[in-house]
Length: 259
Image (cartoon, rainbow, N blue to C red; front, side, top):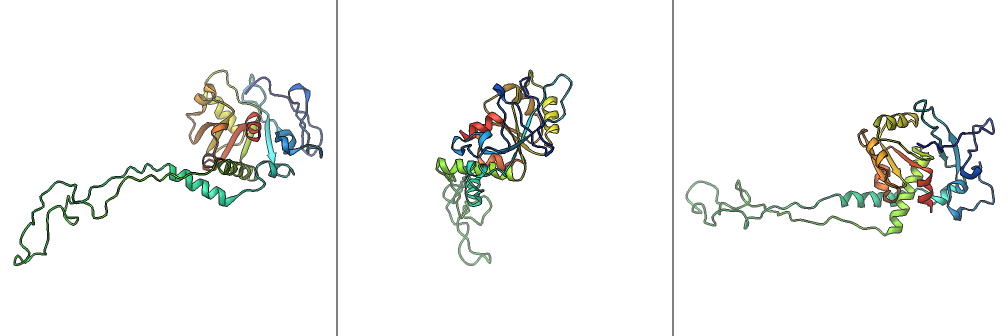
């Protein structure tokens, strides 16, 4: 949150508004035909509707929300063109596999303590024939199928990981599960302010907050809220995005992704 958040001017009854950007520029709705997607900027490549939720308190500045609509012709091109479900599945399997420790270790019969002497003679006892006390069917014996440490890690090329991230973001946009604000600034750590912000943005379930860079004030304020994960835009990945219901970031964060 910042005092620099712009006020909103409504230009038409359709609900589409043109915000005042720094320097007096306005965000075109829809983008002009001459706007190029190659620049990959939020203003030129997407339709966006900006609305202002209620103030958190009397002294707080306006929080300006950018609601991205996937109706814009440049948006699919910007975030990979389409949601690649097969690539997302491959990425999720990789991230899930990379979380496995693979440190399991059991002992075979040659590694457990105990004698190798045959417990009793083969015939004439009336009992089932058996060997040493360390065989797998005895209590405390070795494992018949020993489990050894294994590296479960998988790898994907950087371009595939980034494309999977873009597909995850595009899926959030299409399902209206993304919130983009001008910026998030707090004068001091206060969980109550972040909780009010989430309520104003309609976030009532799990949320991934992606900041352009680390902000100790915001991170300390949000870390006590249940089902809230903090990260930076540079660390965004498909696993974290899809693992949370809502993605919350800033306009600078979106432009950093599109850069």
